[in-house]
Image (cartoon, rainbow, N blue to C red; front, side, top):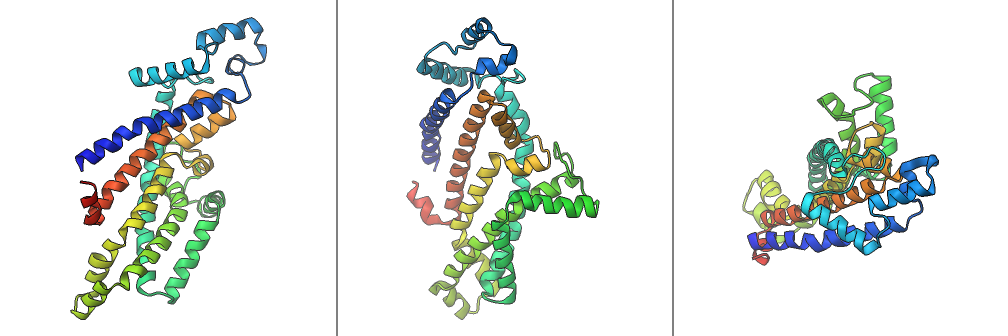
Amino acid sequence: MFKYIVKRLLLLIPVLLGVTFIIFLLLSVMTGDPAEIILGDAATPETVAELHEEMGLDKPLPVRFGLFVWNFVTRGDLGRSYTTNEPVAELIASRFPNTLKLAVCATFLSVVFGLTFGIISAVKPYSAIDNISMSTALIGVSMPRFWQGLLLILLFCIHLDWLPSSSTNLASLREMILPATTVALASAAETARMTRSSMLEVIRQDYVVTARAKGVKEFVIITKHALRNALIPIITIVGINFGTLLGGAVVVESIFSISGVGKLMLDAIKARNYPVVQGGVLYIAFAFCIVNLIVDILYTFADPRVKAKLR
């Protein structure tokens, strides 16, 4: 297992280099001169040329890419924001705690409710509760998060006046409830549908029928035998959702004015703040790679056969 983890961490290097080069190349050919963006309408050819030299924009693309990689590896430097002149790494680090809190809380809610309704639907397929659960899940998946968040704001903030409509730093539980619920609705729906599908396949297996014939309690059959053997696809969908949220729930962070990575990236794209966009994409790629590694490790706890293959 240790060798496998080390191998996966080493594989992060070419992946991150590839992602960095692609986003570096795309941003370099996009319209808009960074020097003119920084200097504004009052820019003259002389000041633009000076800023080009100062920022290294007069150098060839391979040289600029090499300098960017070298600065990142040696100093953790992702460049500076065009709009605020702050280090990009510090900007992302300052927004990351809010995004992490939102991702963890939303994932917790989606797992609790998704597993609960998915298991109930699998144990009692085609029943009234199964039909209601799956219909609700379908609505949760198909309805855009913008409308989900808007409806929750209208109900709990404007009509009932129970919760705040903005949650800049998610400093309290009241500020966390609406954003986390909005994010968790679609994730819980996906988890419920995956749990139901995976559990139905396992429940029909011979070893489950044998356990029932031996008089094993239904609760033990469902939790110990069926659920554990159905966990692989469930872990996969939860991991994908969590990795996506670590990249920033752009819509939800914008609706609730959360100072997170997603909103930072959206604002940077609007302002053509290329260093922040570039650093944000690199951060998202790193987050996905780490989450995928954690998911692979969790597979070994859910299924010993996977652990044997990783030796």
